[in-house]
View (cartoon, rainbow, N blue to C red):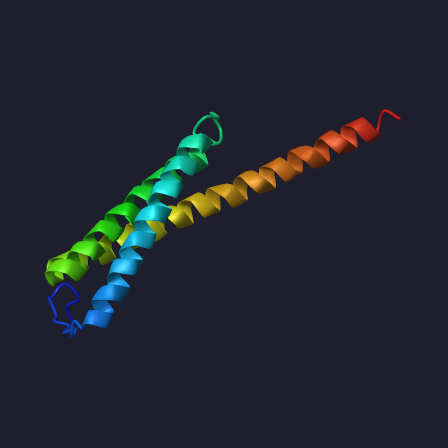
Length: 124
């Protein structure tokens, strides 16, 4: 079975589907801008930039996905829908990287807090 062989999926584009795709597009663009701003604020710290950069990249991918979803809804172009899904894939990939980095930093932070408390507690 060749996975690189192009296959066709047919989607009937109704007005309800177009309306839903436009709503998804708007929400993705809004959340994309919010994520870019949050990522930029995270990049103000040197160490927190490790989390902020993937958040910015995820926000850009989500914004691009929203704009291509909008074009797919308005122009009935299948290539726009494919590009929207590809950008959405990139969003989830960078979101996962940011999430894993956040968990790692949280664990390191908790270890440092416990070490600090135990070192202070030993002096009393």
